[in-house]
Amino acid sequence: MNNKQLQSLHHVAISVTDISRAIEWYSSRFECELKYQDETWALLKFANIHLALVLPEQHPPHIALVDPNAADYGSLTQHRDGTRSIYIQDSEGNHLEIMQAEVT
Amino acid sequence: MNNKQLQSLHHVAISVTDISRAIEWYSSRFECELKYQDETWALLKFANIHLALVLPEQHPPHIALVDPNAADYGSLTQHRDGTRSIYIQDSEGNHLEIMQAEVT
Image (tube, rainbow over all chains, first blue to last red; front, side):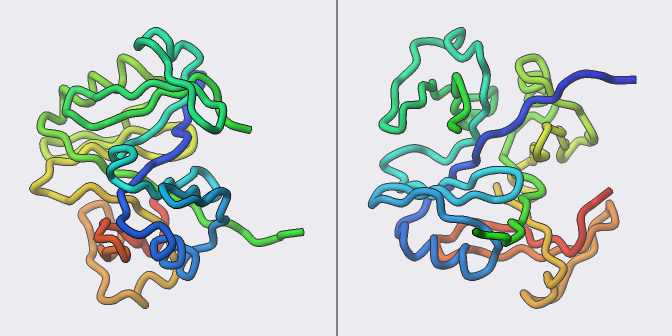
């Protein structure tokens, strides 16, 4: 029996060159909800996770997890939306964002 | 009021060069569960989504959605685990796997 509480991924971010075009592509094909959009990134809500569409010069493609001990990884950066997080790389060079607390 | 049923992402797949090393890296840092492992890929279960660790020569990094109408995108490929899916690209060149039905 395993009572371990699994952690959640908060979002996955993929690179896009045209935010509006990408929103249109996803919204027209899948049931998702546009939560945020500006000229540099957008956030689509799916049932179980958020999909971030990001210009590559803003952030690398990454997956994001919430971890109350995010600061253990280093100094956290405060973002415009109030979240605090740090970007790290896994053993393979993939980018992860460790978020201190989930955005409500 | 919005009663739209949002769709779920089934998994996100990232490229790794060493499957075992990547499993160790994720398992030692995050509460997740190893569901499958062979020499070419592995599947880690998180609370809300699966994270696939894949050798780049097997599959490109991608996100996967379940869509009963997957066949509308083209001819489905049957995989070793019994799933049927098709790989497509979004408007920005990102890879998506459209799965006909979720693996139970």
